[in-house]
Structures are given as structure tokens and as C-alpha cells.
Length: 183
Image 1 (tube, helix red, strand yellow):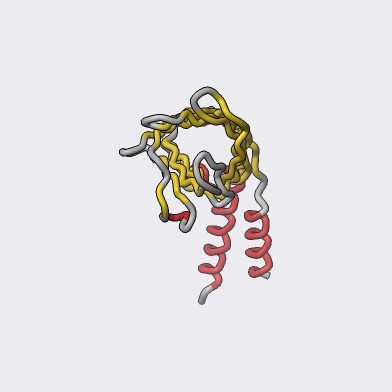
Image 2: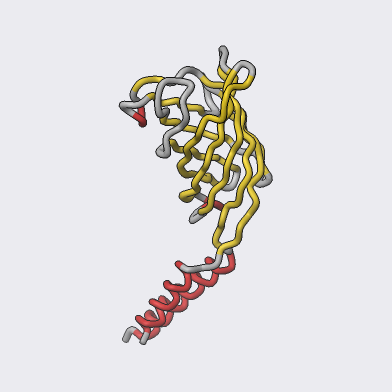
């Protein structure tokens, strides 16, 4: 009986309802040239981080964040990002992470435009068990440094905090009943 109660509580927790949160914002990166090797080997890797020698910043409807992009280029620059490119956005209360890819949309003065699709695969803190996706329209202006900007729009699904709290209470109750049942 107790095992079936525990199984029911766990099943409810892992199918806990989530709610979509609008995610609207911008990122700006100042980058260097892509390098051979790295996480994307044998393809070129373009790494954009908040620290030197590159610079990255982001603002959004969820607050300011420090974006990191590990872009696996499909070919020689200018090139779209392959689907195994990775991102992480570090907020004060957690990190949102996942994968992304892009397609080039055509030349613009001094650079090229692109459209990127992001898939959220999880995170830490407030973004633990996050899912969903968003898109970004962006530009790359070539120079020293190269400047990449993105306009982000989409939704992020987060488990409801009350569901997670109920899971915790349920597990405590099961553990307490087991302790009382011992001779």
C-alpha cells in the first residue's frame, strides 16, 4: 500500500503542471574570430562569453543575464550555427541552458542577418527543469571586434512551485510514516 502511495506521489510530481513565461530580450556580444577545434571539432568554434577577450551582455523580461554562446559553425564564416551549438544565460537566481541553431537571412550593410532557434533543455535554480523554446532575429557586423546582436522572443515553461512544494511534503509524509511503522 505504502509503495503504491509513493509511486502515485512521484508520478504526480514528474507530470507537475508548468506555466509558460514570456521571454523577451536582447543580447549583445563583441567577439573574436572562430577557432579550429574546441567543443565543435572538427568544425570551427565561436565562443562568446561575458569575460575577456570577448564581451556578452543580456537584458530580458526576466531580468539581466550574462549570456554564453558556444557556436558550432556549419562552414567557413559567415556561416550559420549548427544544431549542436550551446547557450547558457546566467541570471541572479539561476541559469537557463540549451541548444540552438541558425540560418543566414542575407547581407546587411557591413555584415549579415540571421534567424536563430533556441531549445531550452534545463537549467539551475529558478530554471531547474525548464523547457520550451524561443527565437532570435540577429545581425553580425564584421570588424574588430565583430558585433553580434539578437532580439529574443518566446516562452519558457517552468514547473509550478506549488507542485514542487507538494511533492516535498508528500515525500516527507511517506518517510515519516515509514519511520513510525518501524518497531
